Image (cartoon, rainbow, N blue to C red):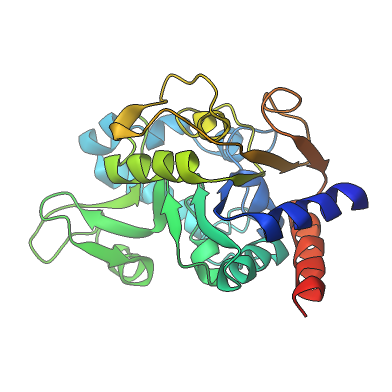
Length: 270
């Protein structure tokens, strides 16, 4: 493990006035949640068109049956997954007042399970469902109970429930996007953890943090001038950010790296 870079990250965290975190699938694979695109990922096991909004609208029963199969599968532990060391370390850093916000591209609710409170969900949350008619929100325990007897599950108003995640063909929730862009604009440190940094618009957040050109920069009334900001990657592999946007990459397991950072921060604070 690259101890000098971990020490440098600890120094940056303790000195930061507004530190934020951007997470992707790589932080959750250590909790047994497979990612979507890599070999052995979800798209190799399930038809990705199941997650197109047009298909859901055309046949919600078919999509919900796929979801039920995924829930019952021992290979897909999204609903039973537990936070790992990385999630818990970020929750500690927030509780300690060091990290302001976690922006996540994940839909697994693991940051919240670990105790993080200020979480922006870029792609929604699969552990909830929402009525397409009245917008009422339901927890998954209630939904899973409902789909044992009827598919698709329905709201009390009679409307069809849809997993509360962003399907292909749906827009990123405007409030989440604006809030994320503003956090990126305001931060003086961004940790980028477990993401390939290739899926827009989330991939533009480190560029916005750095004050670089981005197709999304300046949206939502965000002021363009930007002070100095550090971007630190924690990832198993380099990304398009490495060597161009990020200050440095700590290469390794997100859980192991973040737990070491937490340990060193605790020592410094004690």
